Image (cartoon, rainbow, N blue to C red; front, side, top):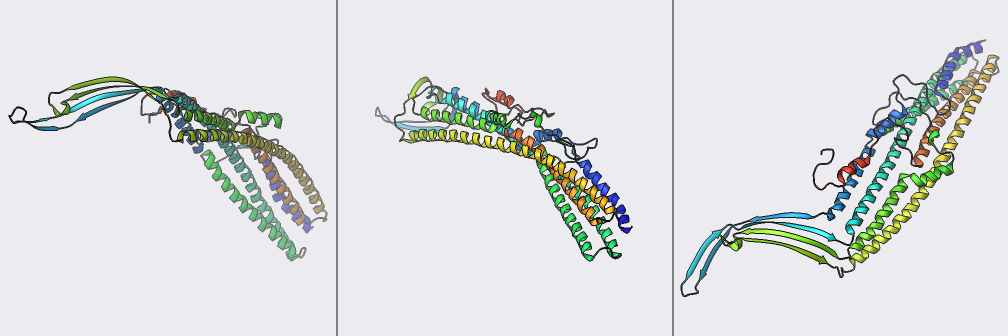
Length: 476
């Protein structure tokens, strides 16, 4: 009778934990309980990261920096002009004796002058053309680096979001597990006082409670870490996070298709291919130094009080064509040509290395997604089996074949199974984002985020043909 009464008094705590844990488990690709009305969504969090993440913003600034290399490279097409002005003071004291008469002349003047010089390069071994092409390749590579940073930020944001969801659920499960273990300890002590159990049973209950509290504090620390990472990536503190769904519907049908897409579209591969183009153009740039340079120089100068004579003015204007033919530079240019060719070979090898890396990344993340799906299914089966076992132990406890400790121990197994399922659901969502990133398609546009998509071509078009001006297009 006492054993049945103790079992009945524990039912409320046990049923509360079971119902709470059940609320945390959602079908398919969801995690955590139904959100309140003002909950944050995954899309909203990723939109905040896209708009305000410092890493992404500094990479955008880096692209704008690269844009300015095009007008710099184009500048050698254009003439250079410089104005010169000079002014000074001259004192003249001359003595002459040409006719037997001593003549002495003293005078002072202010010599001054001004002039204009203009230089135009006509031919420089195609260095200007190749420099412009190289600047364009570097700009395109910077844009691909920006895309790569974007997908990494979005992946980190999705991971941080799911980590907070998972760790919040685990913390709540651990907290309520302590409630159950405290009830277990209280009942065990009552039974010890009436002589139904030994001191060993009490020690077991105390040990279980201490372990439960340790698990709670560990979960609390994990949640704080996840919150800090969320704040770093998203830019705000997490409040009430809504369940998140996987993006498996956006993925290719099989791993072979994913590999092909990754090799064709991943920004890190595109970036290194632009680096190969830039390296090839660097070879041509250095070789251009061995070609003749042809230019035109025009100048005009006006000198007043020239050579110190007060009323002696000179105006001079000229235009000159000039050709410079390099003959021998001590071998330095030839060494740099060979060096540039080796750099080109290195860039091509890096492209091959990057392809292998992307291929391995796609296969790895796809395997993680498959594993996460399997773990979710097996975890569901484990939860269901643990629920059945708990019901069986509960019925056996009613007829005296099981102790209260057996009931609560089986309930602890159920809690741990639910924790495993929560973690598996988190892993499945994160793995789907990881696959999307590994094929190079994780972007604000493909995720349909409610943001203004950053367009790097706007700044490029604003500065590519700019001849003059100190202010940036945004007014700085």
